[in-house]
Length: 245
Image 1 (tube, helix red, strand yellow):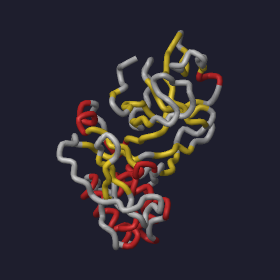
Image 2 (image 1 turned 180 degrees about the vertical axis):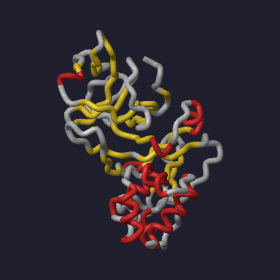
Image 3 (image 1 turned 90 degrees about the vertical axis):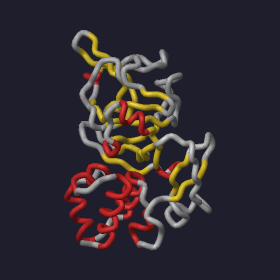
Image 4 (image 1 turned 30 degrees about the horizontal axis):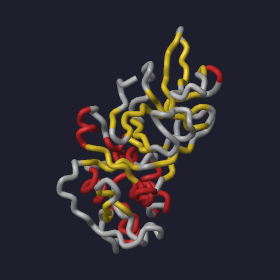
């Protein structure tokens, strides 16, 4: 087995409790065949970044073994402790140092990504969103209360103005990719004609519609295009969203 993969297995178990190849593949949104290839040839650059965002380990440590395993942390506005890549991992971040914040609530890092979608395709790929260290910290109490599985969650940005004033452009929300069964009046991330949308799904007269919060945007009948569900939106920083509309 390639030494980079030995490090990945070690970091996955220590930092995220992932022990099997299948668990790691799901957490990184990769096929098991891709992970098999990494075991033989080493991890791709994109794979290093995915692992960094998904499980909070240093891409430099995975690649070379010369940096600390876990990402350093820095204190941001509001007192949150956020893991960030070392300087070698991200040239835009300087002098990241560990900061201990004893009274912070227990949190779990959720990887921040950009969805890569195609019209008519139900699956999806992701690219790391490295802002704020590539993760969003979700309170562990929310995960436990909503029975969520961390490696099935993605943090994505909201695009456009259709969900204002509830969600604004570039707000970050957490999507549960394991929950794709439509429930009327819940909010979902969907692939509509190859575009990633965050919308409320509403069922009327046996038809499903994509609804916006902003009244300037009318409802869209899902029959009017190619639509598939990426996952239910479960959390927006500061509030749980399921069962609220």
